[in-house]
Image 1 (cartoon, rainbow, N blue to C red):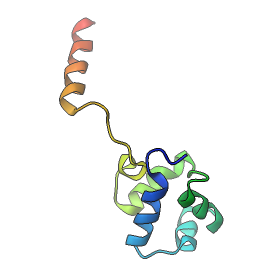
Image 2: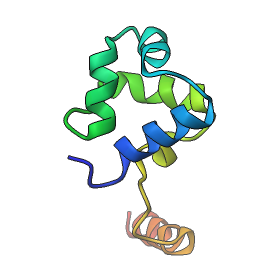
Image 3: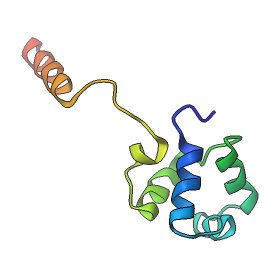
Length: 87
């Protein structure tokens, strides 16, 4: 369940802010056990919590979940242009 590194990132970011699991849980409106499960990769935060967590840690949602795009910006731009011209 931790394919992209979400659990590691939550743990790292929480430690960087010097927060306890309980403090993060209070901020998110969940239990300390929930945060513990996120950090162990057993569960993941609700999808609607991701933007809130990202803002709290001052990172993007992509950075929070550890997502790396598979295409470069230039490749995306080129593909977008091709789609537009085909219409």
